[in-house]
Each structure stands twice: as structure tokens, then as C-alpha cells.
Image 1 (cartoon, rainbow, N blue to C red):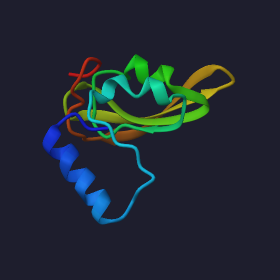
Image 2 (cartoon, rainbow, N blue to C red):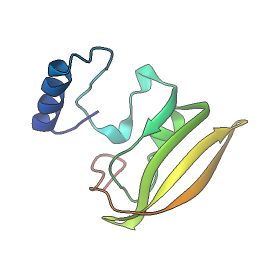
Image 3 (tube, helix red, strand yellow):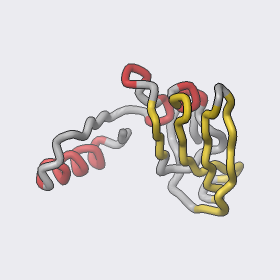
Length: 108
């Protein structure tokens, strides 16, 4: 998932060059996830936002795991592991992290 057209096109070209075919790409707001393809066993977010986007939590499968950087200020986050266990969400702080800003409806 990539929101910037140039990065999306570049990644798509690289994946084709590497002959990687079993990858679904989408150009859109990553904070919204991909509800049509949910639920997901694993979600990895590679940009940090002020909170965990609700749409991503809703798309996490039972026994699923999400890794996401979260923090009150841009580029100052904690890497969090979110797990859905027995219908409940549990979180674990994996320590400090610095990621690019998560931009979108549920980001900065």
C-alpha cells in the first residue's frame, strides 16, 4: 500500500523486475487499510502516526499481529506490537523508533 504515485510506480516496477508476482499492490491511503481483503493475520505499518488507525485494528484477524510505530510527536515513536487474542486487543511496547510520518485520514 502506497499513497504517493511515484513511489508506488517505482515499487511496482522493481517487483516486476524481480519477477515477484504473488504481491497485491494498491495506491491509496494506508491508514484505511484494505477492508475488502480483510481480515489480515499480519499488518506491518512502516510510518509513524499519533495513534493506531481504527480501520487497521478492525482488519486484524483473530490471533493476528500488527507492528506499528506510534507517538504523540512526528518522528518520535514507540514500536508497538498489537495482538488480537481471544477477541481482545493486547499491546506490547518494543521500544523507541523513528519512522517517517503516517499521512492519511487516521494519521498526521
